[in-house]
Image (cartoon, rainbow, N blue to C red):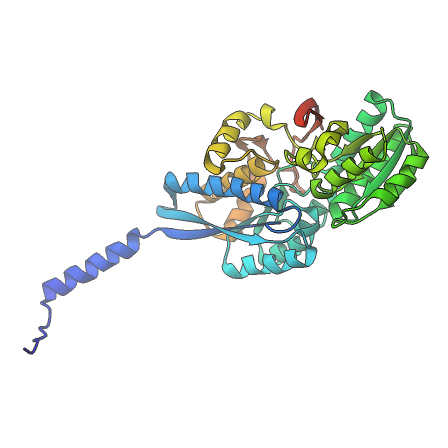
Amino acid sequence: MIAVLRKPSPIAAAAFVFATMGTTANADQVVKIGHFAPLTGMSAHVGKDDQNGARLAVEEINAKQLVIAGQKVRLELDAQDDAADPKTGTIVAQKLVDDGVVAVIGSDMSSTSIPAAKIFSDAGIVQISPGATNPDYTLLGYKTAFRVVGTDAQQGPALANYAVKVLKARTVAIVDDSTSYGQGLASQFEKGAKKQGATVLSHDATNDKAVDFRSVLTKIKGEHPDVIMYGGEDATGGPFTKQAAQLGIRARILAGDGVCTESLAELAGAATDNVVCSEAGMALSKMPGGPAFAEKYRKRFAQPIQIYAPYSYDSVYIIVDAMKRANSTDPAKILAAMPSTNHEGVIGQTAFDPNGDLQHGVISLFYYKKGEKTLIDIMKM
């Protein structure tokens, strides 16, 4: 049997074209938001936490059906792994630009955020870091660079002030991991400690892949410092703290937000209770939306928050808020709307100064009691 093909009637053809046009008009516009963080390596648990916060926000916004300029918009998170490596950070930054993202969240590492910033600046794409605390990140003159945490110029002096005023330390030893973050924080702490009248006995450097700190710790033990300041991440700060205890060093160990995670107890064991650390933001329990967010996060990902998830979560909403105010998903218009941001989110109010830093930063101090992170104080900066 031979099939006979009949030409459709003009009415049928018109109906088909109309239906096709309607389908196209009603299709969601897919808008990519970039994200980069260490998803492999020693800091993967922190990077994944950061990514989870952004992903949770994207899922919520899509469920509410975002509309920009009369067009339904579906967000897509373009997640990349920077492996906490500066060179890799620039590679994934260029990939995100090539992928056509309209804005980027990342990284939680200063060492990758800083070199990536030029690439996003050249492309005119907003970059919001949820964790880069090195002051240089927003002092390079890039109008695309923003952050939703405080800086080490605040965090370092806060730790130094606590060491001298509360712990009554007169002598300190300092060790950093040779990264932009570790060096920057240690340098700011050193300046703050000297300003407070403390004597810096030594300032040694290791690296962010180190696992054995016994040599430098043995040297420090002979110096008998009142406190030891470690500039680095929890992946190295945990073993550093544990080995200090094994060598019989009783001096308190001070550290910044890179060490101040929920995983520190797993990495340092019982020695965790000798640590005082800071976060360059409000403590989760004191954030306006912190407790509710923590419950929502645990329900979605079946694990506790490490540290940066609330900041990356709010960063997505800040980008979407800029889209709404610009009534556009054009990267240039999103960027133009960013300086006038005034967003109330999980972490509290976010408004930026001319450099892209928070107008109202705070530093939270913690200690560990039987491995549980416990708030000491919140300092407004």
